[in-house]
Image (tube, rainbow, N blue to C red):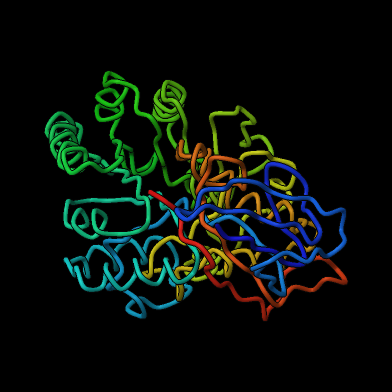
Length: 362
């Protein structure tokens, strides 16, 4: 049994508790959460830390297979050149994947929504302490190859499922999927969750209406949908349905296009998550660093909200909130300590760091 406390404990599913005490069993499951009324309490074997306790982070959007591309692509190159560079550099590097996986573990990430265009990440994911949901990505503008592309995707999906890993089929983006491939996706069985690169460039606003209708039809027939990046989204693009989740990857947006989404659009949205994207477009795989960037540009977004975006919302999006995302009895979400908190303004600071105190249980 462990008793862990800090200046504040963020259960996430309820308001922060000053000097709260988190009780864990030997396997990391939450036994109790004690509200001491703000007054420090003496308790045998109590671990007290300077900072705040939050559940393990959820990285709702990553590309583990691109981990070898760190420092390989020029910043601010724009999305078309970035996509072209990824295509030219693409290869398999399992060692880079393992290093990226370990980096995420050190940074307090306990679950990842990961985009995959092949099966080379399977062994890394099987052996990891992180929970991975793999999105087997489909794309292709040649309508004559739609059935072939869909069949190849199904074959890749089966490999992940056979390995005991959570996975689903997903389209890359509205502009990279032919109408015929959209139709194949629509005819398929509903997926537990899908993830699509969404409004990442201005050109998407000029997408053919037929493709837009097909995309909406497909997204709405699935249980949950992650809309990723939203760099050029406007108010009329925000769907407040409980099945739609908006994944923000601010450091990647800055790296590729030197711009951010209009963060004010998402401040009242209940379904916002955070992602790192890949090391092709980010210097770090750290959800805390994404939180810092958002705080730097939108200080009106509260610490409570940022923590929820980084934890519970991502767990809900991936359908794993029975174990991850919040400090509630019976869950084992992992425990992160964030130090370097600006308690005067109740916010993270540029010097905030994360330390893992308890790992999550897969």
